[in-house]
Amino acid sequence: MVDRVYNFSPGPATLPVDVLQQASKDVVNFKETGIGLIEMSHRSKEFMGVAAETESLLRELMDIPDNYKVLFLQGGASSQFFMIPMNLLGSGKKATYLNTGTWSKKAIKEAKLFGDIDVAYSSEEQTFNRVPSQDEYTVDAASEYLYFVSNNTIYGTQFPTFPETNKVLISDMSSDILSRKIDVSKFGIIFAGAQKNMGPAGVCIVIIREDLLDKTPENTPTMLTYKTHADKGSMFNTPPCFAIYGVGEVLKWLKKQGGVEAIEARNIEKASLLYDCIDGTDYYRGHAEKASRSLMNISFNLPTPELEVKFIAEAAAIGLNGLKGHRSIGGCRASIYNAFPKEGVEKLVAFMKEFEANNKG
Ligand SMILES: *Cc1c(COP(=O)(O)O)cnc(C)c1O
Image (cartoon, rainbow, N blue to C red; front, side, top):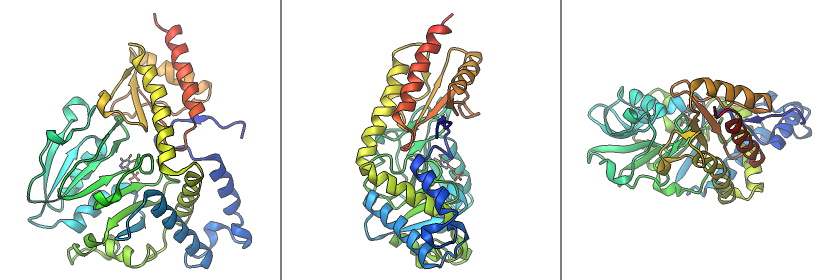
């Protein structure tokens, strides 16, 4: 593995090397069956075992209560943008959304197809550099649910604490699921595409409270009805077998690391290294307001766009890859999910100091 680089990609993102090595064996010959993992029936005893183990590890690591279903769906996190309102709204029904970035904006657009959408807060005019505190919005009394994105992958903001509400709380946790301890029982639905913090692309995990499975309007297509997948243990049709397996392997790895609490402490430590570097100089400017900073995605600028181009190129030349910011805000972004090693963050910080010294002008 000498030629692997530090990969700061926002997603698909760095996975533990041990997981990749194990997968490379299992894809060819799964558990001495003589059949590769992605060649076997999803109804085989072996694959059913993989799916069951993945679900039970997720339940254990997130402490998911028994009255929640765990679904393995396709169509990416983006399909949840319409599946949620399609299943929970309908004509005359209302929902409240907090607009804190590109992903919430896309969810709002889809939700408007299925109901009356109240956007109770937006930081769009401040280029989404913050998330609101509890006293900055009110949830409409008629709303079926309150929807928010816990970590804004592009802008590098994250809710430090979650909204308190008596409504059904729904969160897109695609870029911070399993990165910190949360109380699942406060939520109606949590969903996350696997490819940022949980495994390979191809599966979206939906954790849904059981009472929400009975709210779907009758004319909803079978495949787009949550209950279809809940009743069949995500095996109504062929599930994304490799992605489910990949998530399972990442969860085994996470358990070995000490679980969510242990990884949370490490995530705080890694992000602090970078934020301390940014705060220690005027040369680098963080995009997010301090109180809204993400532990997963750190977006920052240099004094000029030209210096940013140079910075990204020189970093890549020494094995620090994927630091270019999203096209919507430019600049740089370091995505340092659970599996991203601390040594890579330390190397980036050393490079940032050196680059500043050499290019201060
Ligand atoms: C990446 C991302 C998505 C989109 O995920 P897809 O699986 O590509 O549809 C949605 N929400 C958040 C917060 C993301 O980071």
